Length: 194
Image (tube, rainbow, N blue to C red):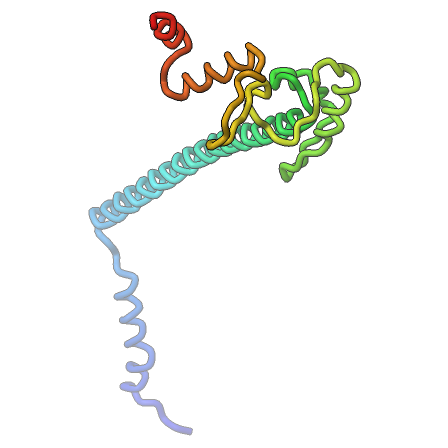
């Protein structure tokens, strides 16, 4: 067996014990108080940051909610405008006499899909046309505001006023005078004075 000498025992047992004692030092009351105060301040800062985070989260959720409501309102208005435009177009094509009469269309026949597609407009117009035919005139393929009673001469055509009725001549004269920026009343006054 090998003999253990005292210096080896001291190095292997006593030295680590001395180091352990240094680790388990006793701290002063002031140092412990300072650490506790620092810990308390850090906990308060963490609570403040958490409260700020929660309030910011609530504000963002409220803003998102109001944006959703605003978006839904705008989407609904756009869909209603699209429906009205398609309904007016179909009513004019069917020969409705006045666009204000489209309010009489049975809206239960018109279906609007989630994607914005619209079905049943023509059926709704036809149903109104069957129940109230007096609201419709002739079907129109294009919208024109020209007066059908006034003659439409070409630029170089010679007009034969003798074959015109008195009303056609008056309509032609009024349209010609108004194109020059003169009202019919001024024309009559000027013409009668000469």
